[in-house]
Amino acid sequence: MWKYDPKSTKADEFINHKEILDTLEYAREHKNDPVLLREILERAKERKGLGHRDASVLLACEDAAINQEVEQLARQIKQDFYGNRIVLFAPLYLSNYCVNGCTYCPYHAVNQHMPRKKLTQEEIRREVIALQDMGHKRLAIEAGEDPVHNPIEYILEAVDTIYGIHHRNGAIRRVNVNIAATTVENYRKLKEAEIGTYILFQETYHKESYLALHPTGPKHDYNYHTEAMDRAMQGGIDDVGCGVLFGLDKYRYEFAGLLMHAEHLEAVFGVGPHTISVPRLRDAEDIDASSFTNGIDDATFAKIVACIRIAVPYTGMIVSTRESQQCRERVLSLGISQISGGSRTSVGGYATPEPEDRRSEQFDVMDTRSLDEVVRWLMELNYVPSFCTACYREGRTGDRFMSLCKSGQIQNCCHPNALMTLKEYLTDYASAETRRIGDALIQTELEHIPREQVRSIVMEQLGKIERGQRDFRF
Ligand code: SAM
Image 1: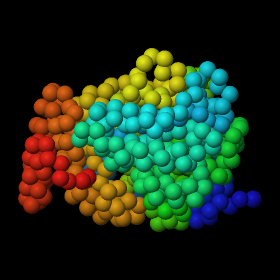
Image 2 (image 1 turned 180 degrees about the vertical axis):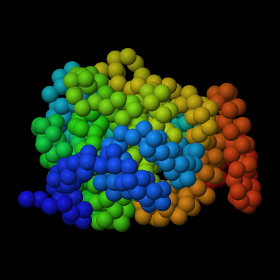
Image 3 (image 1 turned 120 degrees about the vertical axis):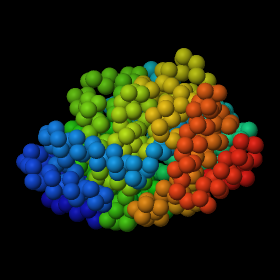
Image 4 (image 1 turned 180 degrees about the horizontal axis):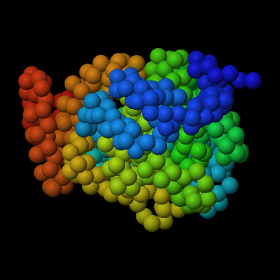
């Protein structure tokens, strides 16, 4: 019989099924308990986070007034820790070859309809130039799992190629990597290649469902997959990004599992995940999302985001173009700190966006706007779009990043960097209207920088950017 132990290195012990069931039972019993709910909220206001049990009670709560307070607190924590900055990135699909049998993903090995494609280094160059010309500085590379077509050497070469491309003023300064669970040795190689965050979605924490949803291939091994972040950290990767694919199993189970995973990493390595992603299952070539019975509506999705924000205030949260503009707008204020923009989910889709490529898309994108439109929209909502990648460059990753964030210092570095990288974007890539709105926003934001000395440094840099000088690094 497995027992719950957040410090254990065994998946069945740190994501313990019985502990999750007990948590859900506890949440059900107390979801309308005003005294406990009030007590949990008061503790949450200390901004030190909540454990999976308390957070699950908040998620289950049915009291409208308390739920409103949960939303308000999430908004406040988001504002206090991340200000009004939203970091932008794009996914780059390298290869859709895959040997796994994931029943929800069109890459699954028995899908005969999907044209299989793997980018050559030259094709990667073309994709990256297209991405740089849009204004992107931060990418998440994606690939199916296939030891023959997509071995670690291919991924490492791709990372090297991407960092080496400088088209006009373009540069990709942070490459995050979303590839299948691998060995400590391979994680060490990824670390040496200077990747940003290693991202791996758990898909579902429910072991029985996981085994059924991943019937064949190496990904079938639940424990190997669930223990991947431990191996990544042992391999020296400071920043790991967790997530579940909402819609596969019951969201309350996933929520508790996700927080237990974060608690485990914190307990063992002293630092929780750098980011949490909240992807929702979408239709795709060969996949009908409605045939999965655990889909969640937008209101539930928003509540999950708010409760994650409160439970792990220091963890960045990512929402992708799987979500519509309207849904993204709602969750931005509740805790999201990073979004993708102008994304293509097909292999080679940035340089060659022809219609025939649609069959190789990984899933249907709901927000199909260009990066320029996304940037303008964010600014119209009073957010500062940020292309900053400094957390990585300054070595402020892992526990150092967390301690900065926890001490509130992050505002002093991130806000000026956000303004300078936004200025870079506006000068080099934006449409006239986006630039006009952006320049006005930067002026307003400058007035809010409290320290005179910092403000004058930022103003000097902004002037240089406008004059085409690029003598700084973010
Ligand atoms: N192959 C890697 C692995 O095994 O983790 C990850 C790369 S995959 C391109 C990225 C993510 O896309 C998956 O982890 C999964 O959560 C998500 N995904 C797969 N099918 C999807 C669908 N139909 N709708 C939305 N997201 C999907």
